[in-house]
Image (cartoon, rainbow over all chains, first blue to last red; front, side, top):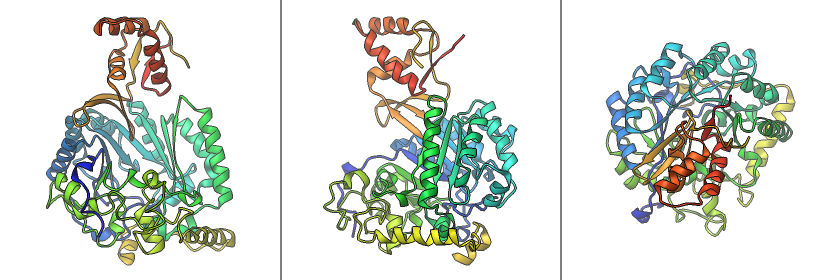
Length: 377
Length: 92
């Protein structure tokens, strides 16, 4: 079995902590990164539990902290957790849909020590935004973006890109400029969880992707020095996999709403990891000793062609969740890699999505909500 | 955008410069990112408090470290810092 034979002194401490405070969310985005069966996880950590987790991870060296979800604003103790995080010296990022945000709360969070707010917008038009979000939210999101700027936060606008909105790239960029975004995250959809089951409807064609990328690239040069662009590549159109999580158990630590600790936020989908819970173990024990965090550390777990590949220290064999979802075996090379014997599955996925796109007779999106979660889970 | 020689230099209010005990080094923190600094870069940035311009920062550091001839190195680093948005200068 993988892991276990690592030299403990080789383990680097966590730098990033993603605190998924809740799975509750008023939005229903069909590419949500939460697990399909999220409705089965009903318990949430208490305020004191979260404070303990933040303290323990900070002591080990975690410094970037994301408050995420679900919608983290649904947690009434958010300002208290932000205050605790600031006292510990974290740089805190609030990753929000903006839903439920008020000017009063923006001020309250600033006073508590929040460093930055990332607001997601689903599209450049009200009609499409509200359709994708499954909730009327467009005008409010734009107001929130203005308020974030007004109160001196660095403003990060996040737009997830997929086939339904990729044609709006010029308007999305204009919107970011109009809202005065300091950073714009153009996140091409990653096909896990809800995005995986909706892939035929979300995956853009190669032509759409190339065109959108060229527009984004030209814009990046135009706004250099004023706005930074984070472009999350759509790995289906790459021939090498992403260096997922900067290597398993090297940098990133996700804590799910019920206290389960995950080496990446999708790792819940993988079989047999026995992911530990912060109610049973300290972060130190979880990071160093748990089966889950040692599972894909280092290179001993790899099969061919990764094992003898001279690029394995660059991309770590890609993403374990993608290997599992697309090949059925989480030890396989990420099939995005052109060296993978299963690389054909990517071409097939692209072709199937393309046929759907051209058919003019698309099946409806499956939205992320409790009813669908219970059906799918 | 190039560094103005006479205007005071201020560390960006949308970034944070912080000592990290676990890493034993200064880092710059910003939305979803972190830059690790070596000691000399950190010393330069700590001088960017909005009261001093380039020449005054050079003189401060040369005095502090009892050395001379730092002007080119400090100037080159601050150009990079400006380009990355770590520092700013108030324009009139």
